[in-house]
Image 1 (cartoon, rainbow, N blue to C red):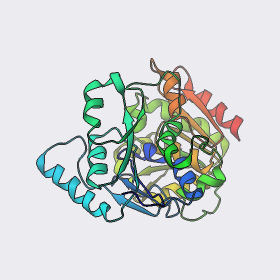
Image 2: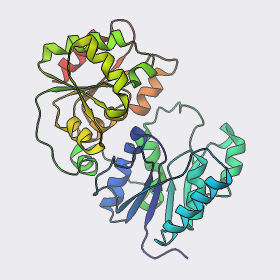
Image 3: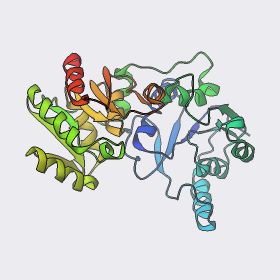
Image 4: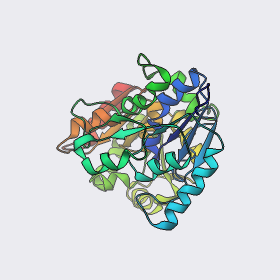
Length: 323
């Protein structure tokens, strides 16, 4: 039977930006004094501070795999989690492994997303694992909901129907940063191959950097795993690029900056939660407006630039407006 006092397990098996969309929900659960643990992936496990949740658990199993060995790994993590005797599991992921983990953890109330007739087979399959379902569109939601709003709906059974997600960086920033970084007067630019993966040409990124030099000294940064792309940018601009091997100093660099320019990426959403003014560059697409509505920076001053035409000039203008 559920305990008289609620406790929550949140399962989010996605990328850094996806995980950060949980921040307003975590803030509300913290304010309500509901003990909460989160299950993340190795790639996003360090994205929250120790204040965001009671514990962060790394889901060390494969996604989208029903191989026997992987199902055994999920069961093993579930048995470990079951000892905490959570009253509620919020399955904040579409990956089947998240649904399986909630059941394996023996959580009596398991709330997750259902796509109804958008994905009828998955909807039927999920009934085995969930006790309550929250509707989510199988594609981009025409209501143009932000991802933070969508995830917050999972927690309303604990928080009450009147609860609303905060957009106050003063409440959200401590859940992302372990400590307050020293201020930095350099404009930060994320150097990531996500630019290329979004269809944005390297020459355009180089042009953006050349335009931003007018704002003063720049701080170009990248992750250690993206060294090849960073080397191409460094060669084209003659500028040094700072590489981060760990999540904490990377987050601090974003939080310390007076402004950030980045593509739709994890860095954009760190800035969005800690309050750093940010220019976000989104690729043109058929559903551009809905993508922006879903993934725009949540709580920080921001401008969104569509990456078509002479977008580097528009991005520089947008940054000038923010500063």
